Every structure is written in structure tokens, then in C-alpha cells.
Length: 155
Image (cartoon, rainbow, N blue to C red; front, side, top):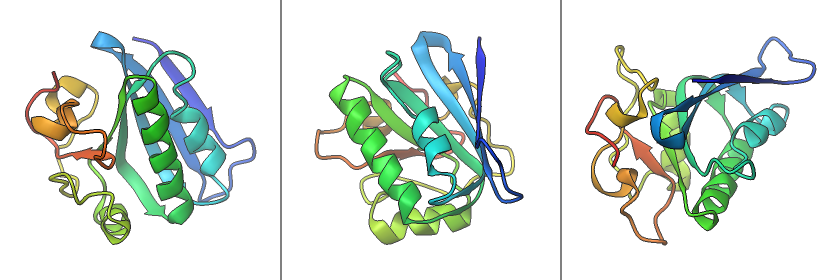
């Protein structure tokens, strides 16, 4: 597995870090920590970029403490871009604060999203996605799928 670190060029105390790990099956697991807003959006955008050929991405939101509409827009764009490339974007273990933001804009309405559990792990993407939409079997009209943690395997 290879790790790639994406960090704001000049991180502020409330910045965002993103560490990407390539898991089995070519799934990129992006672990995010900090705040997602208009100041940190470029870090998120770069971490979720599917132009490198990795179009199946799990974004672990378990350490994200805040997200505003800039973050939801970036997630929706990344979802569209990964789907266009034949892949998908999955959101894993959103904290209650982030989950509420996602619910307010309706990103969660086509999935069984739940707040992060104290024992969540997204290091193995085969253990984080529920069957159905989060396993890539939804329709093209699906929103970004969210995965409960832990749950059934991705296929």
C-alpha cells in the first residue's frame, strides 16, 4: 500500500489534512482530518481527484470536525467526476456534525448513513460499505453514497 499526504500549503490551526492509501482492488481510501471549508477546499479537491486513474474512492470523514457548503459542493463534484470515470465516491463514518450538514443538503437521502462509531475503521474498504448503493449498484441518479461503519463488504 502506498500513502500519499495532501496538506494545505500554509495550514492554519483549523486546517485540513488528507492522507490517501491505495487499498486492494485499486480503491483509494482518503482519511481526512480537520475542517472542510472554502480555505481548505483545494486540499479536499486534490485528494478526491480521479484524473490519476483511481476512480473508486472512500473518503473517511471520521476526523472531520466541520464542513460547510464548499465541502458539500466539492463532494458532489467528485461524485460526478468519479461516476463519469466509471467509479464511485463513498463517504465513510461522518461525525455527527458533518452528517447533519450532509443531511441538510440531502446528500444522505439515498443511503443508510450513520454517525461514526467509536470503533470505526476505513483502512480496509471491504469492511465499510453496506450492500446496494454503497457497493456501487445504485442508479446514475444516486447521490453520493455513504457507508456506515462497520458494515458489509464492498463488491
